[in-house]
Length: 129
Image (cartoon, rainbow, N blue to C red; front, side):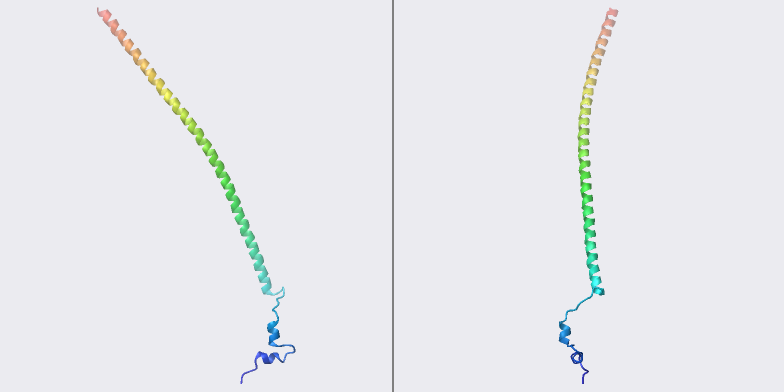
């Protein structure tokens, strides 16, 4: 013979049947550990989500600032490059002009030396005759 089951014992308790117990919803008091843990998890999760969102937003803001600085530096670099290119063109033109003047001066010098040599030769020839 088996010992009595819960159904049999429940019938001895006034108003206690297993069907009534099964049908009653389980209620947790606010002091219950599960309720507090669940609330804490939700609060912690909410705090974590806010923290992650704040961190993400800070990174986005930092990236935007960095992008603006990079654009500004790029604009400055392009302006400087254009200025340097203009300066280089001017220097090249001045160097070309200086070379031209130097060639012209050399040609004049050669002509003068030829004239002088010619004059010396003429003077020598007149002295010998």
